[in-house]
Amino acid sequence: MTTKHPLLPLPDYQRIYQVAYSVLETSEIAITHRACIFFAAVGTLILREHYKLPATISAGCMAIMVDEAKESVVVYGRNHNGVVGSDDKAFHAWCQCDGWLIDFMAPIMGVSLREDGVLWDVPRRMLQMRLADSKEQLNEIRHLGELYAFHDHSLTESLIDRQSIQFEDLLNICRTWYRRPPKPLKALMMGDTHAASKRLVARAPTIEGAW
Image 1 (tube, rainbow, N blue to C red):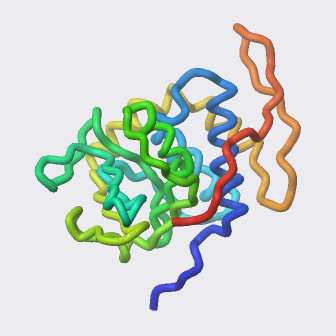
Image 2 (cartoon, rainbow, N blue to C red):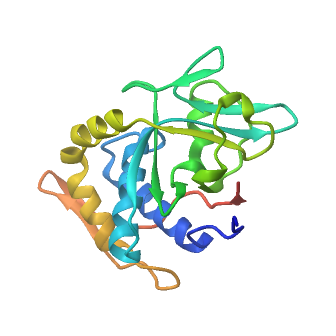
């Protein structure tokens, strides 16, 4: 029987998303709304260490209906006549845990779309879905929030190997800074030998609900 309750409560999901967003914005080493591997890595690390859950990073192609009236479907990957695939230039990354797909970058998907010239009004929402509820094909998506996702194992391993060194220090900062709600985040400074330290502040755009 499928439960309607997500794996993570909204406050916990929002806290993980805020930590990843805020650390990346403060570091200025990557474009936040393009850093899906970082969001997936932060989520995976925090779920493992703070929640003792068997989370893993997943990458591949994904599609989700964001406007049913206009039949607007956001597609991450390469779409060739309704057949979606992924490669190292066109993909998305998320967490998988206990049969759930959790996308900690979902609240800012509208930012990427606007940068690409797609002026859809996409709300900032939490995305958690049972993998069993994912559609088997892109053309099966009919209703708001319905999703298709395909895990590409070889692509995932390649992306993790390529970016693990770049983000290692930032991942450790996220792990150290995080506190499970309702506890407040730690007071923490972030910096290196080349720049002045900055105080970390949770500043991610507020989530408006859930898909």
